[in-house]
Length: 240
Image 1 (cartoon, rainbow, N blue to C red):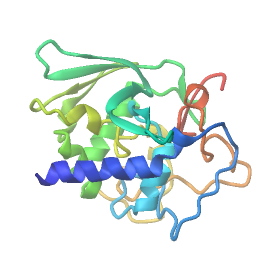
Image 2: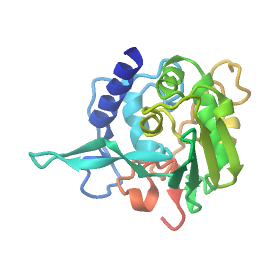
Image 3: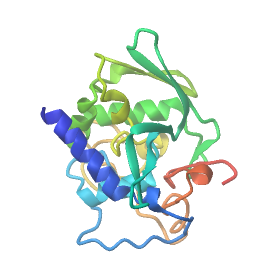
Image 4: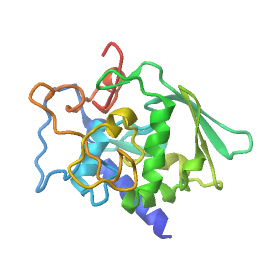
């Protein structure tokens, strides 16, 4: 089945690119040697290359992430059969199995100190399912297809309504595509190319290049401590 093969391929990409599972300690500097670097920091951008997915795995947060398992040789890798909280502190499936409700961590902050709220989650998911290209196709692999599926219950409660029962829906929320973006910041970030159909946040949106004063800040550096700063540099807990 094509969507399953695609989903599996992205999982493998995430496992190969993640790096955090094997990290032993926090470091302020990460050096990665690759043939070509990321062509975008916007994972939803059409034409984003494979190194950009590697970068996204390390600099953005999702509602959930995969657990980690130890292989027979002692090395570690992500366990795609195990889902762990990231920006969501918990989730509850509806009795009829047709929706899931997430409770967000109230101490999560974007790099500029803005709280991470359910409206940011909905904006990010709406964008992923409508921007086109691979991001929309990947979301569809888990039956995540329409903005109407995503509901802001309150500032820290977010609901995903299912179009159908699909065993890939929950794992699909932990792959690199459904990242949570600071919606207000993205709307106001200048874009170097002509805007698309999204006002202030089209598929051409990219984070502004960091200035000398912001380089090395949590927004632009990889964190290997999930308990203190989230994965993302994009989101971090207060007091980190």
